[in-house]
Image 1 (cartoon, rainbow, N blue to C red):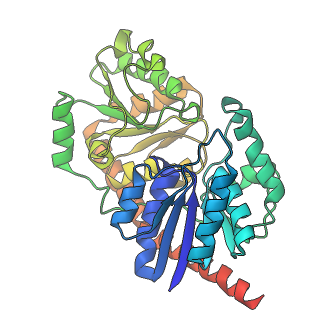
Image 2: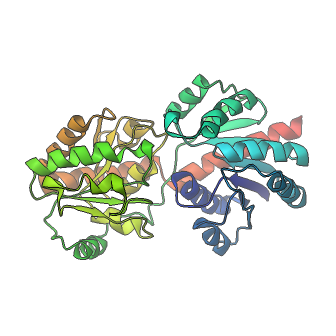
Image 3: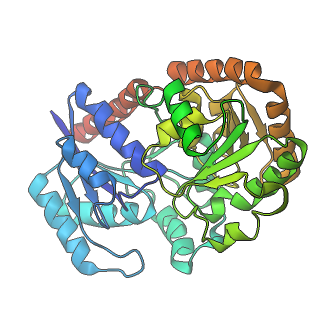
Length: 379
């Protein structure tokens, strides 16, 4: 049985972290054993992985303070576990994983890039420097996996020149994300909304790349033209005491925006929506779109990363950072009414089942791993 050791920056809520958990589950039936190292703490997904029988180590590293002791611990884990292949996730893990794998004498190694054209001006100088440093080191891993063509193009522009690129889309668990009338009713009862209330959702952590400002500006325009529409936001930092939200929830939006913060029942929340929105200015392969579509919810998204590829002809894409365009698309969808939402929602779920199921994606990963191991053995 092949053993893959995954190294990831953290196991808190996030698209890369969720994808790792889904991949580990999807690889198990394909006779691939997994183990996971978090550079920081166990987060929310560490216990989930352990319940699946997956070994998990947490190094307790602070992202802001480099710690040579954490590198030594990681080298020790690699030497003791002797995995057949090391897969790293996210920039910090790419660097730490590369150093540790070389010191431990473990090969092959592949990086997994999960973002595309991020505006790094919003982040610290260390975060801005790291991708360019990794670009200089990008010949060192045996391959780089990326979840979208947009991500590959963006990193080529940063100087990445790997031995091999492999583009593998994200996968979605259609047994966890599915249409549910009971979930729809329960969430709407929680929000004191009727079944007939048009509900538009944005499910994303509070982060500059998610551009909540554009979403709320578009929501204000839609609220004026669609007086029955309500807006649901959920994710880390999406709470009423966040100053970024307090100043905007006035006028037509007063009493019509629901800030839920981080939630553990995202599939239920998705199933309660009529429309799902993505307002990001940068993405690679946004999980939220596939999850909403699997729940039978049509999407309106900014044209970033693989958004257009995921949605296909089941929704609408608009330019990023343009509240007027986003509002016009949402307004047209709300005006279409429940019959249109159901039609596009059914088409959206079918598209996910056919193109982005986790079973299909896990086989792609297994095949890439097998190819790398075969090439390494030949050398």
